[in-house]
Amino acid sequence: MSIADTKIPFDHYLSILDEEERHQANRFHFDHDRVRFVLGRASLRCLLARYTDSDPALIRFKQNRYGKPFLQHPASSVQFNVTHSGDCIFHAITHGTEVGVDVEVIRDSAGLASIASYFSAGEQGWLSATDSQAWNSAFFTLWVCKEAYIKALGRGFSKPLNSFEISFAMGKEGVEPRILFDSGDAAAPGLWRLVIFEPGRNVLGCLAANRDCKIVELREYGSGTLLRRISLV
Image (cartoon, rainbow, N blue to C red; front, side):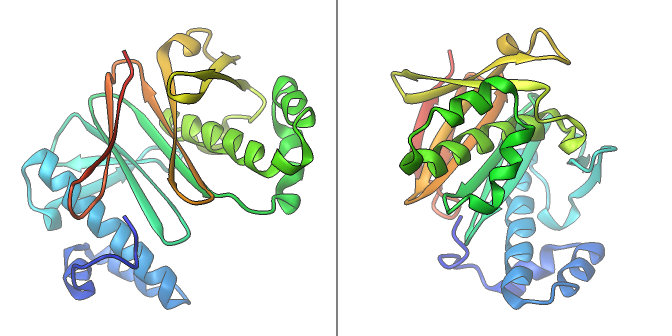
């Protein structure tokens, strides 16, 4: 969803939040950050309410030991993950399968280049062989894939960035990333699917879903308009 395009009154969204969320919203120094937090959390509540047939205001969250949120109430097999970049907020929701999503605006990554030194040797080699004009795009393509996978695992950055490797190939859907190896889980390459999407100009995203997920649908938040349907079979 785009913050600028949101039609629901802000006060209505604020009323959906619980007391702790409203306190958190009030701690933001800049209004833009506060608005993004409120719209992101409230729109998530509204989506989860549709999937669980519940009241958005009655939904309760908990976090695992690494900070990944999950549904505490109502009891449900629904899993979710959230990311934002710039003015856009993205929600990934599944039934019964772990999911992670990350979105980044492609920008001059000179200040982030040092992060690449923490990647696997194969990933560093792939970036080193990339043309300088395409380096920023390559870096963020790799970054969103790694971030989405880590978020799907629910481990946060407790999982070293060099403990797994992402490789890329061209397929029928365009660039198709895959997990080449994960030193912590030998079965990971066969268990996870990474899907790259481009929600806007100079914006890249990746969805990491367990192989139990057979279909991925990208939809506009407000209208529900189907933007893209991807078969993972």
